[in-house]
Length: 409
Image 1: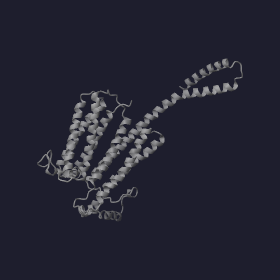
Image 2: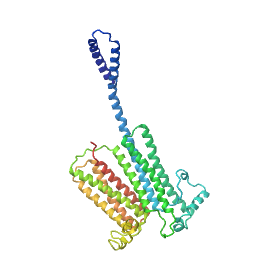
Image 3: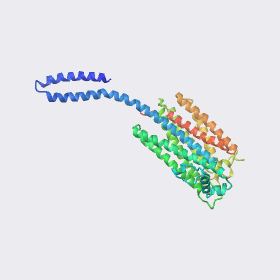
């Protein structure tokens, strides 16, 4: 391509020279000819190099998008791991075992018996030991301490997985203007997650003289911690899929517009259902009524609105919280079922159809896990699987939304 450009350039110079000679009329053309040749040379070289630059530039851009897409999918997987590990930490009542928060200092666990006893002594000064675990041994304390330690170290690894590649890709110049704002938001959110996690733990370490309840973290702060993790997960997953999966051409019919809108609302409902699980976990509401479909002997329990004012019941009454989670779960499955049967009327591409079928299958698996967890009095392995299922269901919904996204104009 470069040779062709030079050849055309020489032809252009020959014609330019002939025109110049005829127009000069025998005058001394030295200086004027020099400027003409220089301008023609620069123009010809830029025209010859332009196609080569364009061809070379398109390849790194596509490769960069693939690399960044895989990076963000890996980050979303690490966030999912943090959410699952945090759920297990909550189920094993290990979250209040580490009573200090240091970004670097706590990365080194105790090694000698003296260090372990000093750590155990600090734990003994707080309400969970005094009220709930007053007969705990040092070996039992080590188990819950390592559970919380693993969760915190995993959170730090997640932060590094976002921040370090962001710096590298930024310096390479791979980010567009819109992508820069997006990754800065993700990095800010992952840092906020760490601070919010400690803010949540602090609520469980406070002395409450007027309360005879089991020490636990605030369900409001737990919901905020989980909610921000879900936002981080969804944003990373969406962006990663958008970079990796080629956009599909869909015929913009009224039926497709309805399907897309229905999918957005259904995804929002799935997100809200997962978030309501934080209130169930925070209040141990899964242990209140362990029967299905009725709650005890009634469809609507007597203590559903026992607290005053009424609004408190939706966030602080374990009966109401469990009732709400049931209603949201059933509504999510019903919405997904309707979405599935409506989509069968449309000629969707293969990937979109696969995403729809996966969403439908995971929804019924998740509701089965939820009912089983309730009926068997919330055993830790089953409850952890149910919590993981909520992430799987949300992932399928995000995938389907991504497959149905509009093509940019």
